[in-house]
Image (cartoon, rainbow, N blue to C red):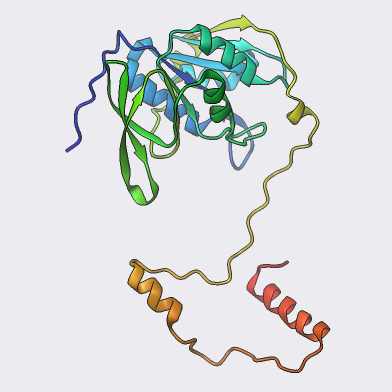
Length: 265
């Protein structure tokens, strides 16, 4: 049985950072999936007191999808394309009274490196929690949170305030965006000084390439099963032992195997 969340929604200041997402198939602009989870978690913690922050183009229609989640306002730090959001976000958060800042673990557009939360926490001097699944309590200048670990495990952490946290698929599923509230919500725009992101402007972006296929994947439920599979003798007579070949012939045989297994195309 999970403990009840102990959070005073009127006493805590929570900010959720959002960005422009991209549909994985069509590439159409949309709300980013993990950023929407950060908004959902923020709404559960702070309710109407949640502040949602975006650094970029305020004219992007996809931003209104966040307003459709029940927000009355979305604050935008107006920046041109190619500007570095890190500088603007750092200055804004440092001057704010935010105690918890939530963000998706990785953007769906732009560099998509996942480094922004780490760099932001480093500049602010705040602790960073990755894979935040739930906030159980906020009181006495500390937070009790659950961190998602591999294979569905959870780890309870005690973190001092203020802190920054990233969320992924372990966070609550975001609510649907309604068209009416999305159109009635307000985009509060603030012009900030633009600093060119040299890393982004000096490089060309290209779609990520799929990782090479692994030759064999041993599927076992326990360590004993994996050890048994690793130490078992090979079965079947499909193998071929090559001896006394020239280097060129051996290399050709290895290349043929890799092509047959789909590792090399």
